[in-house]
Length: 61
Image (cartoon, rainbow, N blue to C red; front, side, top):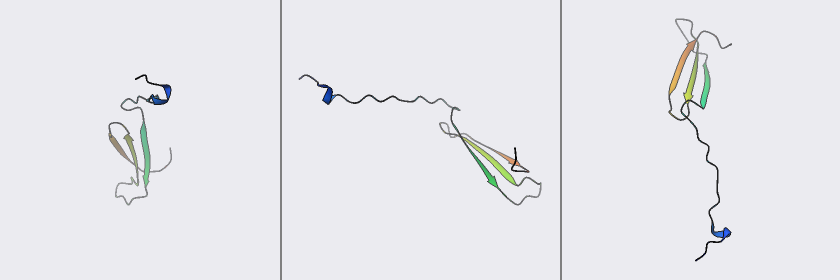
């Protein structure tokens, strides 16, 4: 039979996300340290789950 507008599936837009487009960033600390790096900056790419971490001596910019 004929398909009416009521029977059609709604059209939704799909957001396309490329690798390394969206990152999560977290700053962690205060940790005990022998070398003076008491904080950790952690970044994660949401799509690939790639993780980078960097130890830092302070929590300021």
